[in-house]
Image (cartoon, rainbow, N blue to C red; front, side):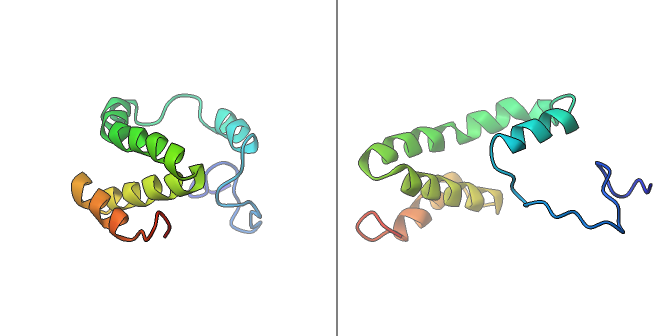
Length: 102
């Protein structure tokens, strides 16, 4: 088996698996594949960086819906990942809303 295809994936046998498996399947797969945390040095930095967005999303969910709040936080997080600063990411996503809807 080639080492280029991790987790017993074969080039000749395509995997018919959803890109984002649903809970609890995702949890079971993670436990089988990952024996230790990946990039543990990033954990505190990442959790501290996203904390204001998580708190914002929880507060937003009480005023709108969990779906809407998750969309907002996910969109802001995506923009952060693209290199946008937190304040601009927040303002950008908020500017996309009309009457608390996208």
